[in-house]
Image (cartoon, rainbow, N blue to C red; front, side, top):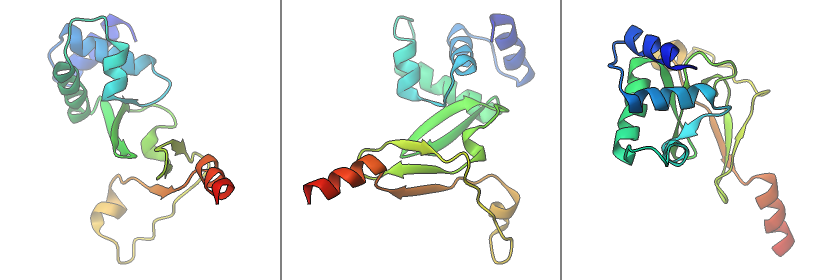
Length: 144
């Protein structure tokens, strides 16, 4: 995403163009995976913006609909909206021992509307499975 694309996207969503906001948007646009706030801070370490500014920019992008905010494994992760194979499109597995997050892209979840709240059947929701990953499960067996 170039600077003109960033400017256009921000204007279309009613956000003011700032250098820090454009940098965060461009970073999300070039990332292969959803980024945590810390990922953004680490990636923009040589820039003059502080952690708070970068966090506010991430939240502004999510609140405007330019980006999606998904909490996986206790950490908010941000990605551009409309990205193919977005984190909101598949469940995740979170290891309770090491915190590793695995994308379960081939898994599907069927939601039967009977008895479920409207917010589940009519809106976005996240599915996370929790347990020990293969590496941690194997290490636990080996030490037993």
